[in-house]
Length: 534
Image (cartoon, rainbow, N blue to C red):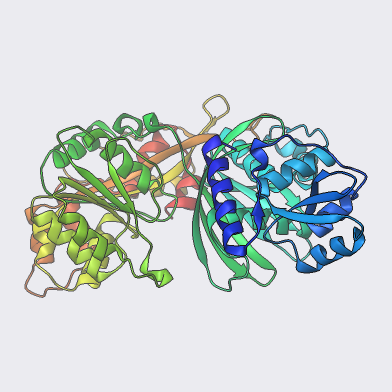
């Protein structure tokens, strides 16, 4: 635990003591003497009380806010011949005393490896570790291992007899460990406390944990995750989305944009106003794309403000605001915050997500009044985003005047180059490839498929799945006169197919076409394209 976090905890405990009318002691500033003959360790745990001072006539116990009154009464009765006093101490102080009275076993934190050949042994080993260590170590250990494996999410799933823990790696879930229900309750208590959520709620909740945890082996772990919880028939399930703490990772050069795609992005974001929208499902890299664009625009002469739920990464030089979603019934809505932000004279505004009509209209209006607005939206394609936006805001001329670029994207698993195996495509596969390539827009060079080879994943003991990392596939819809005419046509019906047809006539390469290019380049497989795009 960092020094600042401990100071904050002690200050909060002191305030709580004043409210409760109790005396308080800061155990981080005092020498810790042991009085093991007064209470056994099981008694200390059950009574939530620690002897912190004793002599022939006096005993002082450190207690927590959660120490039951019955425990205090029992202690007074047990030591009726002595003067018994109680001091409120912090939870960290209590844990430190417990570790002195009952030193924890030395735990070896094995690195997690995703190998099919020893997966059952690994699950047993990691499960054993998790069932031995303290709650904050469990969380820090899982997050540190998830970062090593480049996992995007940690899933904690309640089942009838135990708790399953899975990591999402390269878009696919892998079982990592199983946990007892008793240990799960301890872990959930720690997660709820750190993420400011309730373990007794019967509604879905969202939270954010950002802290440093020092584990028993002295390893310090940056815990920075977004929490999503949902009650199930067996308990509360949790998904933790991991955030990358390195600002250097958010660069346009690392988005793997093709030269033509990069040229489009550069030309659009160089303009002082307009709306840029990145669309796709959860986990498709939308926020990473927006953050990379923001980072490239982050210069001293520009004022940049973001409105996010929650702030996923803190950038130097950018004003970032956390605003809670309307779905949780709070008084602070995206649109309200956005209107307030616009009065601060920003050059660039990022709205984490367009979720409702009010936010959509305010964002569109902002982009018309001299602001560059970046946002995300859930839609299956760039053309579908325009159709959905029309459903949200109704027929509105703001459409054609404000939108500059809609970029739809997905993430596909990338083949491990050292393992991939070439093969001759079947006739069915060739028919699919030809049908996609035949639809390439005029002016775009079609790849040759004469004598082509496709690739499938190979396997090894170190990599039983044959993939290594992920690659994006994208389509970029630039608002052109042709697309504008479709949207503002006589029948005023915004049709996805008509929009996409017009965009392709202007040279847009669709996501499936981009994916097929990646397949023909040996970067991924047709099966992966089917799995992610369909």
